[in-house]
Length: 178
Image (cartoon, rainbow, N blue to C red; front, side, top):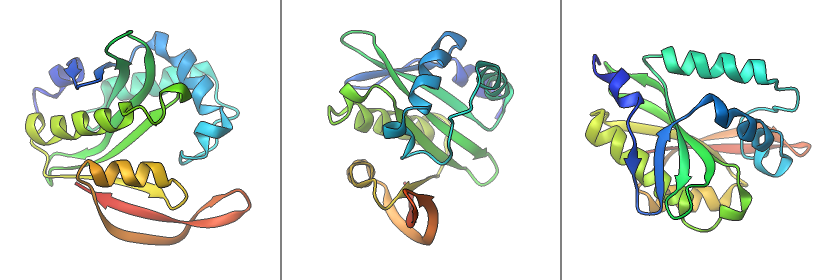
């Protein structure tokens, strides 16, 4: 998609949140969140040894990528940066992508910000980028996220049995799509 670079700089308004491009100044907060065990247990890898240099390399990769877009999640009423959401592995030919989200500021959990960010970026994927399928993976113990995704229009399509190892046991991973 030739206009994709323009979309990467877009600011998108939800009801409670604003999605804006992720900036280098955001990475210090990102690293704190990724290393927080309570946040990290919902992510797909351990980030304990993550460095600022690695985060800067990742951000530069994202900025150059024609198949990934990452937004910072900002609370509308106080302009607080609370997390990130992204569309990864965008396949322009098949019109598909993978969705990911992290709300690192735990005081904003259960306040509707994650739901609003999910609805906002999904609408952007379908209406602006003209994608026809948005997929995600969620671990069976992440009950809050599964409920959010269902409420935002995602449906379960596949269970990957014992695919995720966490807390000394294997858990199922649910694949969902919008």
